[in-house]
Amino acid sequence: MGATALPSAPSAVERSAIKKVSIRLVPFVALMFFVNYLDRTAVSFAEPNGMGKDLALTAAQFGFASGVFFIGYIVLEVPSNMALHRFGARRWLARIMVTWGVVSLLFTWVQSSEQLYALRFLLGVAEAGFFPGAILFLSQWVPTRHRTKVLALFYLAQPLTTVIGAPLAGWLIGHHGLFGLEGWRVMFLFVSIPAILLGVVAWFYLIDRPADATWLSTAEKEWLTGELAAENATKTGNSERGHGREALKEAFRSGRVWVLALVYFGFIYGLYALAFFLPTIIEGFQESFGTSFSVMDKALITAIPYLPAAVVLFFWSRHATRHGTRTWHVAGPAVVGGISIPLALYMGSPAATIAVITVTACAIFAALPVFWSIPSRFLAGAAAAAGIALINTAGNVAGFAAGYITGWLKDFSGSYTLPMFVVGGFMLLSAALMVALSRRRPADPSHPADQPLLEVH
Image (cartoon, rainbow, N blue to C red; front, side, top):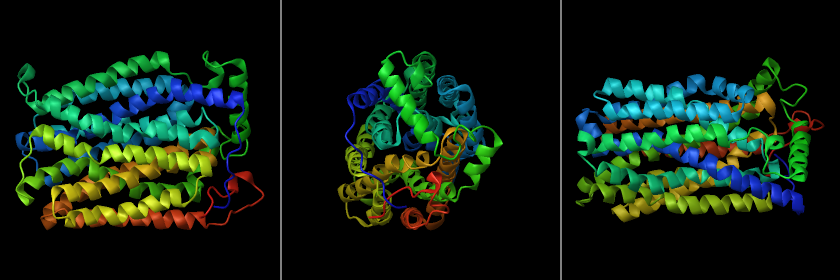
């Protein structure tokens, strides 16, 4: 994927337009993502803190409950993103948030493993399309050269969800008996309400396109609209071909889209293996190393890997923005993560184990914002909506697989050693596929949409 030109010095209008978008839209969409990720991973905090015992869950049952969320999400992923493209991000993202908030609230009263499975499936249905929709929405507001930076600011919400959310979850779980509820039920109650409130606010706050933004000057609107239109004219799904079935067919026939989907699969497999099972692994420290932790101690330990991950994410993405995105910005972290995650299980103390897991978290989060700047380099319009949703669908397949396979292999082998080697293998495969894609020759060098995406270094 040949050369990516280094960014030229921006004009005053360009700087002010990107600054306003970064201040007005990105923090709000990142807050939506924060609540989104907290809601979908709340089950990981609940399981070792009473839910697993109260519902009599085995590791495999918990893994299935964690992963069944993604089945509902997968089924409606592409249709949801196409609906967002048709009806606008403001309406569709607001609808998604209110719907998932209502479903999440029902977890407060779950009574059996079967009810847990059903609600996790419905939560996936309700949330379908949120993440790719948010990526698509932000990609429609900034040109390619600023996209990695903007997506990095958005993606900071994910590691910070655990940094802030884990202690918050621990604090809420500590309020056992509030309203006559077990602590883990109290947590579900109070992490659900913000989604409903934010969904209502999003309906009035979000704006679908730069031309309608009253907070942009006329010059800023014209610059953003012109830059985005010029870029989109060279992409699959452009204004001449970008509506209806033809654009969808082009996205689904794109070899690049499918390879990127496989690359993303490996990263998300690792991400959710950590997200769903790290609290349970920390719970196991008490038996393995003879330690004793309170609920809040375990919550704070869970948060440790994610704060450095947020810092590394920011600076890694800034380097890619300033110096041009390279293949190693994605493949390098995949190798580091693939080696470090099984290595963590051979450490001789809780501190050493968490230190190595921190390296894994840093690797995963460093690569993801850079990765998501790639699809919109060659897709636009309906094709972008379909292609981004298809890639994210692969991630949701990984989310289901990570939860279920990790739990099943833990029950089968009696430890987390084998499942963590599987995680490492998938991440190394992502690195290999990224390098292979970077060396692929364009089918038609004269066609802009066929030009290489990244420079190999």
